[in-house]
Length: 149
Image (tube, rainbow, N blue to C red):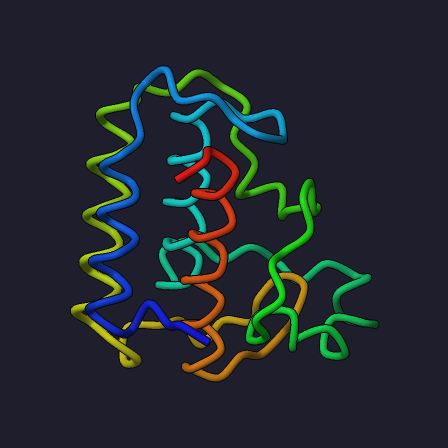
């Protein structure tokens, strides 16, 4: 499984982000491309500990049993629920969000395992550094596939 701690994986993700345009159309889901970029930035901010969503009850009960979803090769399901703190419904500026996400990815890669949060994931709970790195890559890959890149 790829990890965002690997600079080659980070470069691959950034290359794919650079293929997006303000008029890129989604294959599924509700977000437009700028909202998706903002959502992905919020995900990285959660992984870095910049935002700390609380644990959800259902995650406390069953989340640990589903942790392998972050680290296995199977793609995330389409339209999977997300933490309210990561939902983006307002209009966003494409270029600003693209620049912000690329900056956060570069920071994640540069800081490495030392840069990830110790705060538990809102659904999965406590994660090891490697799980955060694989989850970060898989989340970005999922949303880039959502827009065909």
